[in-house]
Length: 289
Image 1 (cartoon, rainbow, N blue to C red):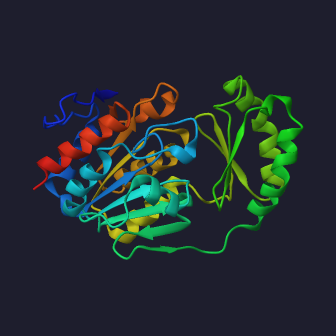
Image 2 (image 1 turned 30 degrees about the vertical axis):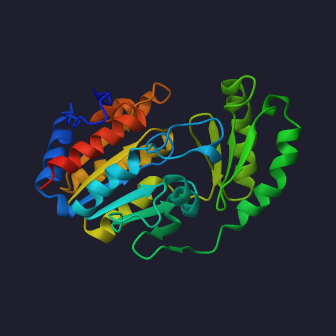
Image 3 (image 1 turned 45 degrees about the vertical axis):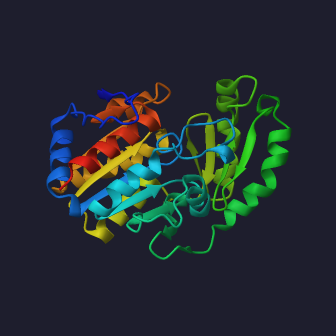
């Protein structure tokens, strides 16, 4: 897939890269020609924010908010779609109270909770009872598995994630935990979503594809860009493909990672991580009417 490397000159206007697929080029053309009907969908961790060993310390790239404030007023909406609680993404992204971000929403917990910048409010249904049951049993399960030593549990409110990046053998821990965590999730009506050295236990029917499709329908999007970096972004890529088949142009962007070739190989455009995405968003804003 096409790639784009971030500029090293902070004052340079980034080049707008060309997607390598015909569908991607059509999506980009539509975004530039009709920005007022465009939906920009963005993952948070690994896309707007660099991946870090401790997810609580993840923060948006320094150029992310300036790029979004330049872009958001020109499009129908910017939606940050994440498995995190929306309040955490808002805090870690620095999105609250920023002039120019009135068209931004955060669809947290894969769309189960929503924060609107225009009103600074979160709306949410009742949580799935299986999450509380899993949260109660998880410490005992991890304590009984030698391979889990060094794994870290992240509390996500409507989901629970187990990170293995800090384990002595991260990939081995990931593989060893996948079966037991799947069994635990299934007993309580949940599913396991694998990612980059992380296994997330969450309710079924919640994914970024569902969130993106529903929000695109709500906003009446005439074209869609979605950018992500992980396996959890594959459903959103599939949603863009479905929208394309319905006549809505779309552009698929991978925030480049060799850890997730499945996503990279499906993208119309690959950028160099969060810095490259910032360049892309800045370039788009500069070229939109």
